[in-house]
Each structure stands twice: as structure tokens, then as C-alpha cells.
Image 1 (cartoon, helix red, strand yellow):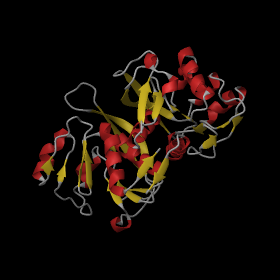
Image 2 (cartoon, one colour):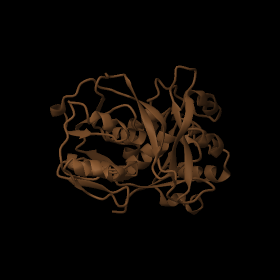
Image 3 (cartoon, helix red, strand yellow):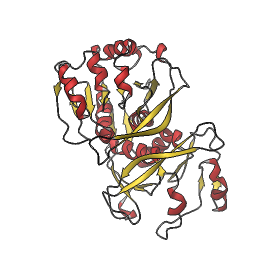
Length: 357
């Protein structure tokens, strides 16, 4: 069967999570996802923005990862895709005024194809006339404009609220990813089996931003129960994260990432079906914690860590290309966040989780 094809439209200062999480999660589930931006082509980047909840009256913004496009906007035909993903952030504020974007989105809406819209991207749907008489939610300050566009506004109870109205799935922020990605898969005709699993994430300060949130929300979206813990912290506490990116230097750069909120207190490994350890800087000191146990296996990692892996007694597997992941028995390893689709897919296979269309 030909894989389902999904289009993701982004732009500079798209919210970081709201582009990458659905992009990699849907690929891990076996879909083909093309990310495009008007005026750009495959291989170009969109700079992203990290929108962080704060104690102030609104969120604050810092620079995120550079998101690499894998398709060219001018070559896209709406008829060749089964669904549309519209990330939020600041990009939709100007994409809603781009005639080519509005025309493309109008074609998806007119065909009744599944559309996910989050944060500010409902502005694009409003510009396309796709919200008249439709229930939707969004980041609250966007509400008055959607009402003016004829939408039936649903005030979000919290930042994870998700509203489904036929082919339209909307949410106010990336906190709603798990539910809206789940509903998008269902709207595309997908069925999920074997997802009644319990998975533990072992976290720490300055773990890599993508390397915790993408698998965390991807597994939640499948219906897994996912707990995130950190030594000496409890549910509700925060682990700051780090954005590790490839920007032409001899090694990756590092910037502050989103704050990741833990949702569990205890570490009781026998209760769980799988363990996920995000990368970044946290493993450097977590490995020194007496409650953490290491073992030697066939595995890969970021190439700069090769010596550590070999000295620990493991058999090194070269990650070539950098997104290649490996399974050795019940162990799945990857080198960096570009490998998330393979990493999550191989973990799903070990757990017996399937997404079929």
C-alpha cells in the first residue's frame, strides 16, 4: 500500500515543537511528510522560535532549532496529499497574507481533507474562509479574529485543549500535541494497536530539547502511558532543556530550550514496558548516579561519544548517515534527533505497537 502523504506548511519563526513533533512523529508511524515554505526549496532552513510559558501576561520567545525543509513549495499539488499540518508560532501571522498559501490551504479545506491547526495557525484557515460555521480553538488572543472570520469559538480550558469538528482538528499550543496528533491519525484512516504500554523517560537538566519531547509526545499520541522522572525531582518540577543544532561549526551549537515538566515521582523500572533515555548533557552526570545502571551492547551514539561507548565495553555501530538507528535485542540506539523517525519506529516494533491505514 502506498504510504499516506501529509503536507506541513511552515515559515521562519514557526514554533519549534509545533513543526518538529508532528513532522517526526507522523514519519515514525509510517507516513510520508513533506515540509515546505513559500519562497524556499528542499534543503533550505526555517528558523524556529521557542515559545515558553512564563509568569508574565504572555509567553516569551527565544531562538530554536533550524528546521530543514524536505520539499519545495512551488512543486506542491494539494491533490497528491491526504492531510495538512499547520504549525503555529509567528509564521502564520504573515503566511495568512500569502496568496499562494491561502490558495493551497483552501484546496485542502474544500476537499474535506484532515487538517490540524495549532496556536496561531488558525489565522491561515480564517484567511482561507475555512472556519465559517466551524468549531475551533486556538491560543486565546487569536480568538476574536477567528470569531470575526465566522468560527464557532471554543475557549481553551487549558493549553492542551483539543477540538475536533469533522476534518478540522485544532489546539492552542504544543501541550495538545498528543491528542491532536492522535486524532489526526484517526482522521487519516489510521488504526493503532498494541499501544497499552507503560514507558518511562529518565530525564535530567539540559537534556536535548527535541530528544525528550518528540518521543515523549509521539508515544503519548499512540495511546501509551508515558512517565517522565528525574532523580531528586518530583512531578510538576521542571527540567530545563538544551537546543543542540548543526550550524556549520566543528561541533554542534547549544542554546536554551523549552522547560520540560516532569509528570511522575518515582523510579520503579519493573512497572514499565520500556525505558527511554534522552540525550544532551544530562546523561553525562546521570551516568554517575548510583541508581543508574549501565551495560555493554551493540549500539550507536553521537560520533563524539564513540570513545566512551567503546571503553564501556559496547560494540560500536557507525551512524552513517547520522539519522540511522540500530536495534540490538531489546535495545534501540540512535546518534541524534534527526534519527527520531527510525528511533521511534524501531521502539514501536519492539513493543508490538502498530499504526495501519
